[in-house]
Image (cartoon, rainbow, N blue to C red; front, side):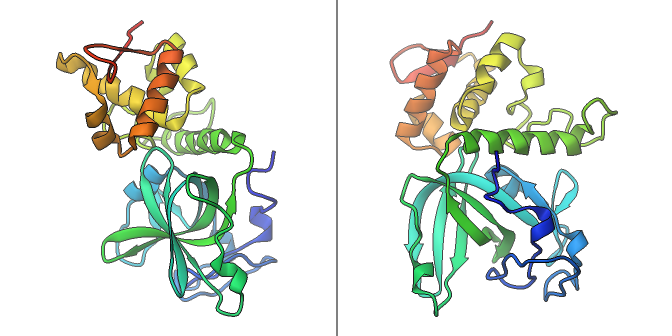
Length: 277
């Protein structure tokens, strides 16, 4: 399965500089205005969640961002389109993957009218390739390529790949020694020390949760974190506020988790708690 639509690291590099930089064929080095003449060999393509993007470390202005202590140059992620705002020079698209939301800017070639047409709709899923940018302390992704996701398996595949790479940098290669970093391995989905970490969950729970959507995982881990507060579960309104999800998203996530027998309703039909095993 080719999650990247035919692109591979050996067939593209990055034009440094502004968001309009894109892919180019061939190898060698590419001198750009960003990165001080960064060579092609220094480029990488990192699959990330939006939360990882928002939490990326910026050592100093103009330096490469870092995730899990490793520099990131090109990034790719999958998410759902929440809004499309066409401007004269660019399309600004708000994308949500269940872990957070971020603006994606795709610059328009004035000589190509087709660039002004997004090619996808609100609530559809897209894959984005680009670079993380920061302007006036607000982050966005300057997109090189955006394309619709036609097979929902790609959404699940991307989350698994992002998880694998995250664990590689924080725990080391499979079967190897621990590489340092966050021992919980949980910073890519939700905040705090109770993020989605399959290794910290009971086998039965982890197995059920692994097949759930990302928004369902986020909801479950938030409910689990709140279970020690002695409250009678968490209400729908608080979940939407804390997770940044819409009412429909939370209801869908709740149905998914209840179908797996992971949560249950408590004082009413819109308040849920984790079913402990």
